Image (cartoon, rainbow, N blue to C red; front, side):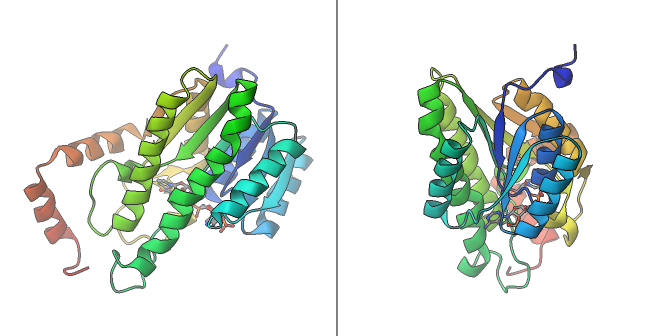
Length: 262
Ligand SMILES: NC(=O)c1ccc[n+]([C@@H]2O[C@H](COP(=O)([O-])OP(=O)(O)OC[C@H]3O[C@@H](n4cnc5c(N)ncnc54)[C@H](OP(=O)(O)O)[C@@H]3O)[C@@H](O)[C@H]2O)c1
């Protein structure tokens, strides 16, 4: 039997950033596998539409408005949902934003503030809210949506790359700390996926994947309790090469390919 055909070990999954893109695709895929999905994000009308479509297709879904930039409130809401639904056994901290491009400097605080609060603090609040109950039950799975951009310094990307790098390191530490608890830890490092976050990108998007394909690729490996998921492979290889470059070469490429003084 294919791993993808097996019944998932989860009853209830909570996904942040499920109103579009990868989060929506993950929710639809999990619901089709029989998992009750709690879809969360800020845009409730989009979540309600996804909920209705999943239910119409015979699945189970609950839409909940959640702004992960409000980290303390996020943790409180998730703990309440865990109690209400009798134990969330899969959480995917997926909510994320890019860096606004209409500001003079991509490294200024206004440019990096949202990604810091949402992509880093919001993801940590989401995951840590469920850890005490998962550890007490001796089972559960926590997943963070990081990025291949976390692996190396990239020009014009300090505000995006650094919260993702922090998130990946947090998950790596967590995997050490939780190894005897029965709780699985997975970090996803993905390349370019065709979603609204990259829709207005001015940089090339090599090996761009559709969101439903990317979600299916991730879930097949999350089911196998993989510690890390890095894809698509050609992009992983490119990033690996970039990370290995001496710093003077990175500086040269940054000068050549990005606007001066940004
Ligand atoms: N697409 C790519 O190429 C790519 C590559 C590497 C990593 N990623 C990561 O994948 C994740 C999903 O992104 P995506 O590509 O699917 O883009 P997307 O379609 O723009 O999805 C982002 C999701 O995050 C939600 N979100 C944004 N701010 C939020 C907040 N304060 N609180 C709660 N939810 C919030 C959005 O919903 P609301 O606006 O309704 O809140 C939306 O559902 C992100 O973490 C992103 O960094 C994407």
